[in-house]
Structure formats: structure tokens, C-alpha cells
Length: 198
Figure (cartoon, rainbow, N blue to C red):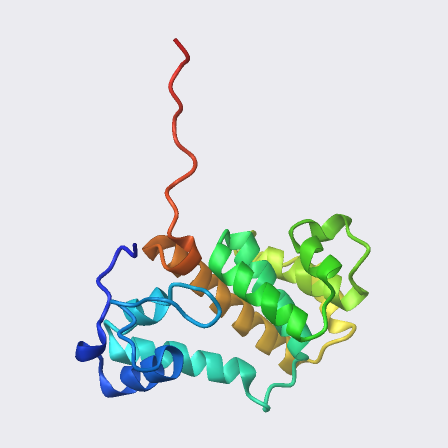
């Protein structure tokens, strides 16, 4: 259950209602949760609490999928997927694994993302994107000159800016989903003290 109130269909702002209809049809997504991809759909119903934040987030989806993007969608999705894994969001990771397959990544490549460093399934530019993503997410943006040089060998400045912005947007979504326990990130804390055996 999400940590914040969900907005039922009857209370949804017009721009939110438009998305509810696209995703849930005539159903009230709070009373009858579930999307066609199998998620609970509570990302949408919680974001609906603040319609302008909802609008901003949805505009971000349109931005990264825009035909104006110079960055190869495969590299974009690779960054998004690794950001989800690195930040520990099962929701972001799982959804973007599916997107990677739609773009032509093999099951072996998708399965190798958690341990990409020891995998032989990725090209040099894919490895550079994965390393860059780790340094953005896990090192807080402390990107080494060597990693950045790997990107610069194959990507334009515009492509690198797009990759950076989109990857960090998905770090935000991954963190937000975990904090608010949305979608597949509605899980109890697993790191707890265990009692001493008696």
C-alpha cells in the first residue's frame, strides 16, 4: 500500500482523468487497481494528488520518447534500467527491462545488467553508458575522466546531455517509488536487526 493517499477517479483533475481513461478504462484505479502491464498502477493515483507535478512527470515521459532525441533509444533505456537497478527500485528496473527487450536487447543482455562489469554481452559504448550510469547514481555524479572519455568517443555532447538528464530523471523516479512504496517497490525494509538465537 502506498504511503500517500491515492486519488480516486471521482476526485481526479481533468488532465489526470485523461490518463486514468487511457490506462484503466472506465475503472476507478483506486477501487480496482491494475494496469495492462501487471503493475498496481498506484504511481498514477498517488501522483494525481498534485496535478501540476503529475503533468510535469508525464511530460518527462514524452520528452524522453520524443523523436527530437538524438540519443539512441537503446542507450537511453540501458541507462534507465541500470539506474533502476543501482537505486534498488524493482519497479523502474522491471519496467525498463521490458523496454530493453522491445528495443532488441536479448534476454542474456537484460539478465546481465546487474553484473554488467563481468559480462561480455555489451558493446564498448553500452559498457560506457553502464559505467556512466553507475557513476551518476552510485557515486553521486563523480564521473571519472576515463568514463567520460568512453562516452565522448561515440556520443555527441547533445547525446551525453540527453543521457545524463534522462538517466537522472529515472534515478529520481526510482528513489521516489521506493520512498513512497509505489508499484513494485511496496516492500518492507529488508535490513533489520535479527534476534539472537536462544
